[in-house]
Structures are given as structure tokens and as C-alpha cells.
Amino acid sequence: MNSCQATYHTTSVQNMDWIEIEKCPLCLSASSKHLIDINKKGYIFGKECILIPSSRISIQECCRCGLAYKTTIPSKPFLSEVYERQVENIWTSPYTFEAEIELVKQLFPSASFDLLDVGASTGELLRQCSQFSGRRSALDIVRYPGTAKYINGEIILSLLDQEHIKWSEESYDLVTVFDVLEHLYDPQIAFENLLDFTNPEGLIVIETGNIKSYKTNSGNMMFWPYVSLFEHHIFWQKKSIEYAAELYKLEIVEWRLKKHKKNYYHSNLTRLKSFLKFVSYKTSPSLYFRLMNMLISGTHEPPGNPLSKDHLRVVFKKKK
Image 1: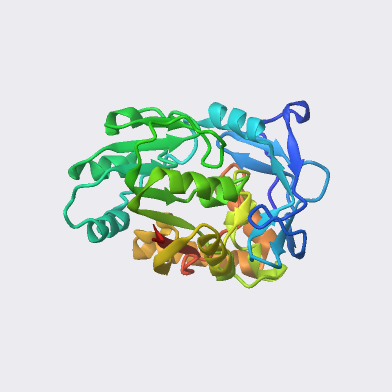
Image 2: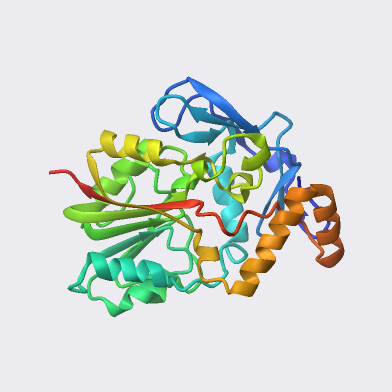
């Protein structure tokens, strides 16, 4: 797939720390089936190229709960160091959260609730929610520039799946978790924390990639850029979400398949260009990369199908 080109700083092998995953992070089962191998020399993250270790990285699917997971992932300290270095270069593309705000209005028509946004990044969702009354708080691994001005609650610096998180312990009416569940090391701890963050009548809204949006064979799944990202460790589907809901006594209030948010508001012309790139890559990957390298310098990932509803959104509430 891609290679680390001179336009990116390459992380020294001595500064890397990888861990091996031998059982399902959600249900702890060691029974799994092989989905694909990740065939690339390095991950591109911000302006950094992180060489993949010589051992093979594959994606396995748990035979019990259906969660898919990488067999080799960066350690938490290693990941945090890379985040700190690249915080101003990642996840900075604009997004309005219009669809998410409409959902919030449906869930809280009185327009008064306390919100915790997990993975708040630059704080755009918090800014959009400033029209509603109540606390607005953020949880993220690093403090993003400018986020603080959209907060009138607390900033929790932590991974969602970290034990003994330091926070106010004043629970929230709504906890939003958009594009975070794929980053988890320990889904069990993450769901325990989500339960703690949410008050007895509160709601949890998650959105993440749906690995079943692509057929589970190497000819199709490698068209899904989601599996090729350094910070993505696990991949969900309906079966694994339902397993987690049952395990943590959560009721699924709403279930919906949808497009990734970065594709949601694209113009028809942008969608057409993206689809033509996808068809070009599927027809001849080598020709696609040659053309892209001629047109745009840098490293290019395989394009996903912009027409695919490759994400799922779920609204949970606690069972009484």
C-alpha cells in the first residue's frame, strides 16, 4: 500500500513501543478468525511516518462477540507521545455537526442538559451545543488549542479506557462518543467509565465504523481506509455492539447505519470525484498510486467508497 516518503518525518525504531494482542479486547475470547493482513511499510499520522514493526499486523474477528481487532498496536505511552507531537496537525478539517445537533434536539427537546463530549478534539460539537443550557465538558487525550473557550464545565485529560479517571464525578444527561470506540485498548473499562459518566436517566450516543459495511475478505476490506490508520485498534459491528449492550445492561434506543461524517455534507461534484478515485483504485491500484503521486506529492492511502454507509450510530440508555 503506502510507503513513508521524504515529505514526512520518520519516527526512529528505537522510539517505538508496540504490544501484541492475543485475545479479544471485549470478551477476552482467544477464538478468532483471520480477516486481512495490513500490507504497508508505515502509518502516516499528521506529519509523521511511523514504521510498522517487522512482525505481521493482521486483523482478527472474535468468534464469540464479533469484535475485530489488530494483532499489533502501539502502546498507550507511545500513542500519547505521537498525539502530543502532532496535535496541531490531526483532525483539523472543518465539520459542522449539523446532523448530530438535529439528533440532540430530538433527544432533548427542552434544550436543557449537561453534556460530556468524549474525543472533543477542537471543540466544534461543544461550540454548536452552546445554544443549549447546561454544562459542556470535554474528555480527550490531549488539550487541543482553542477548545477551552467552548467549555463551561470540566476538561478531562484521559483516554476513555483509562482506569481511575480524575473528574468531578457529577454525572451527565448526555455523553457523546463520536469516532472514539475504534481507538480503544480496553472496551470493558471504556463502557464502565461511560456508565459512570452518565446519570440514571441519561443517554449515551456513539458513532463508529461498521466493519460489516465491507465484505470480510481481502479483496474488499482493504478498500476501507479505516483499518489502515495508526490510531485505530478495534472495529465494531452490530453483533459486538449488542454484546457490549447486554454485558453492561444498556438498552439500544436507536440504531442507524450512516456515512462517515466527513462524507456526509460533500457536494455532488466532490462525491463524483471521490467515486471516480475509488473506481480507479479498484481497477488498478498501481496505476492509481502513480497518478496520485504525479498530481499530488506525499503519501496516499487507498480511497474508500464514498457511497457506502460505513458507520453505525447507536443511542443507549441504562436499563432500570
